[in-house]
Image (cartoon, rainbow, N blue to C red; front, side, top):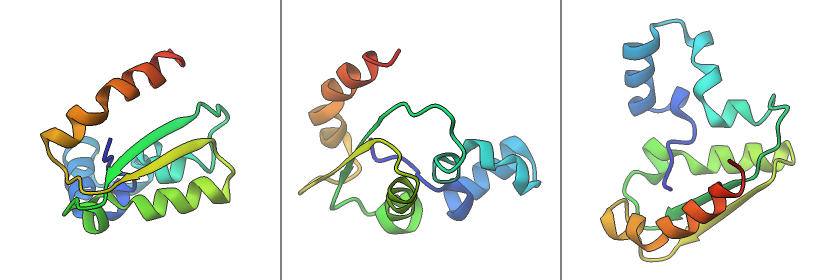
Length: 107
């Protein structure tokens, strides 16, 4: 739900990775979903919901990069842009039940 899809290439991710993993960017790849879809041996389907009015969408969340990688590597995923939603509580509250049900099928 509104994931940071390409943390290696946004300031939020760079700050977190540097603080938690150190400055060696090669170690960061294993935590960046946009990079992982290219090398993943498991093909567990993804469900992504994203609000189209999320102020962090382009600069921090970088959904377009993940969406491109998913298509390029034919990775199974459902990406749903939700009209009128931002990055707040009502977005999460509106769709969390669907995500719990979806992910429970793969646990």
